[in-house]
Structure formats: C-alpha cells, structure tokens
Amino acid sequence: ALPICVVETGKALDEAKAWAGKIAERGPLATEAAKLMIAVAEGEESAAATEALASGFIARTGDLKAGVGSFKTKQKPVFSRS
Image (cartoon, rainbow, N blue to C red):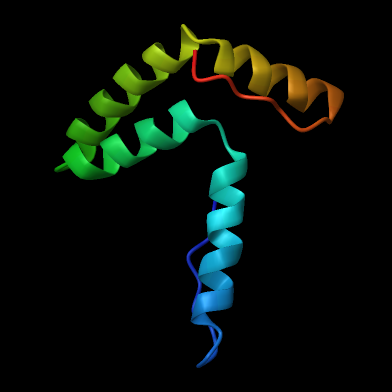
C-alpha cells in the first residue's frame, strides 16, 4: 500500500513522481481496478462489493500469476494486460 504523507514545501513534485513510479510498477489491471473502486465506491459496503468484483476479474487474468510468481521468486513482474 502507498502511505498518505505530507511533504515539505517544494518537494511535492518529486514525491508525486516517486509515487507515479511505484504505481507504474504495479500490474495495469490492478491499477485500473483500484481506480474504478475509488471512482464508484460511495460507502463501505459499496467499496467492499466493488473490491470483490475487481478481485474476481483480476484472478482470471495472467497478471495474477505474474504477480504471485514474482513475489515468490523476488523478481520484478512482467504484466501482460491479459
């Protein structure tokens, strides 16, 4: 998870670029699902339902296998969007 933080004056752009780099390293389908959950969630129950749907979708893709495999081998994953 990416922590929420406060940065010093003048450091926001550097911090934003660092966050963008971390997000870019994650699976594209997982990132899209997270964006969808943020966009549609209106409450705790809605967020949980949306997360369950997104997780089910991602579980049927090659990205899940790539992510789990890279975690086990401690290597950088190669995501395919399929």
